[in-house]
Length: 175
Ligand SMILES: Nc1nc2c(ncn2[C@@H]2O[C@H](COP(=O)(O)OP(=O)(O)O)[C@@H](O)[C@H]2O)c(=O)[nH]1
Ligand SMILES: [Mg+2]
Image (spheres, rainbow, N blue to C red):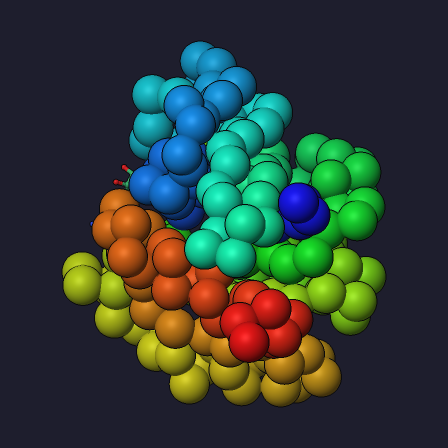
């Protein structure tokens, strides 16, 4: 049985913990600790890792990691990226500058994105439709990055599975 590592990244509150919990077949591990960053309206935040597992129909096991969101932990992004097959970038569209958030992760994970599959998932679009998907696509195009971008609500298991499908299709595991 083969195993593959998939990363979920994004700002605090973008939905890394939610997404992994939605699809993990084991009780997810989350190192959420008390948030001392008062600029973020969220009781808990992830300074470490999320971890979950999902077995695909073909028997392959996905190890799902949520990265720390904050740039000051970008040294961990590199460590986590080793051997990863795919990256899901979660965008919180209710934040002040979601396109700048995208840039942060495109740059921070540029090596992984060049070698592996990626997908950009824009969340909270029901209340915050802008920037629209075109704007994200254009931002990537400007950087020469080609990742599918779609709106998704990671509270919904089916939508998180769809994100994984989009990664796996790029890796041609879907066949
Ligand atoms: N309304 C709405 N809430 C969302 C959506 N996606 C995620 N959330 C919520 O946003 C929060 C994300 O928190 P969490 O998963 O802890 O984010 P993390 O810091 O990236 O791990 C949760 O309260 C989710 O229920 C969405 O598309 N719409
Ligand atoms: Mg979290």
